[in-house]
Image (cartoon, rainbow, N blue to C red; front, side):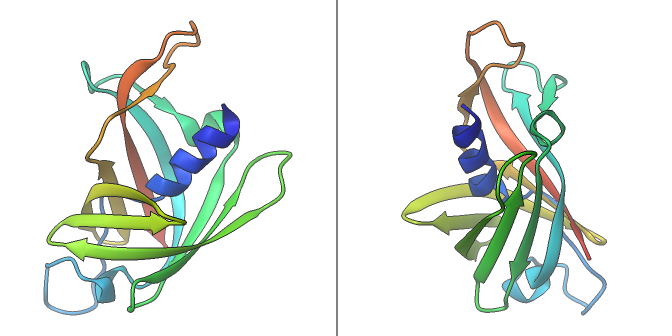
Length: 149
């Protein structure tokens, strides 16, 4: 389950709010996303009640750094307690406020938002996650928050 969570995290590592003060445009672009980002929050949010979420980052002791170039090429380095670092080459593209994060033939699609030095991603597709440890999967969506270095 951990490796699946880590893969979901990598796909998500992907993000819902992002912005900086360089340039007059408020539109999201690869140029605005370019830079180094640290994952500050990765959570699963219950579809049926968005006030309920689980902090996946904290639960698994995850940390991640995403370095995005203006070309859309990116490198994700993910770390989990007791596990070796995982480095993945990623391609990021934008379609309006929709971010497409591609790694090894898999896609993670999210709505991206930027505010100051914070970038947030909210997954468009739901998935299933055991929110309370009872062995039953609940329908959730992923939300990632990144902070610019």
